[in-house]
Image (cartoon, rainbow, N blue to C red):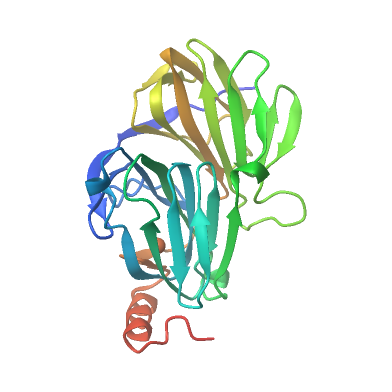
Length: 290
Ligand code: FE2
């Protein structure tokens, strides 16, 4: 099997969002730094409460999915329908905003480490206006596979092929498949260890190194800490070898939607008119109406 090669590497940029939460944005840091169906990938990680305490107060979304994956700390999620969820270490919230959600994501702690990721995944036109939907997946429900040569892989979404064995993830496996068919793995490797994963033909794939470093592919493209590799579509698998301090990385793959896309802040639609409608609906209190 031929390994995929890296089209380009994006270094994550320091930015802030919500009410001043400091984060590192790789995917989505520029208009062209996207990989259909993935729109944005933010990493938040700090010991300093000043960097996260203001959280993400009430805000809307329409037209896509947000996936929050916590490594450390607690966030409380509340929405317009009165849903309350507590995201804890190792847990995932998979939220399909669909036609609209208005929610807040606030730290449930006033000290200590807060660390994790938020990924935005686009929805096809046919699903942008469907009702909002949530899944909260505690850490205990996410399969962790030990690698034969050392290290481990958490299978958050999709089905991983690890050491010749298929492992179904917590989301997008079995009967309930999302139309973008996402694969979302959290991979931990010791120094010098290798990991590879087949990628479905025609799907886009990217990897984000959040600790240590790695090289990827036959060209041994260097992936330093806080960098995202966007892979080309030629080749059947991706491979990684951890650097001298090991590596922790997210591997994402999904089926591209291949539709026109217009984003304005928290709204991601197909046309400008639909964005204007989303803003009108939000202002009129109709974003989330059935
Ligand atoms: Fe949000």
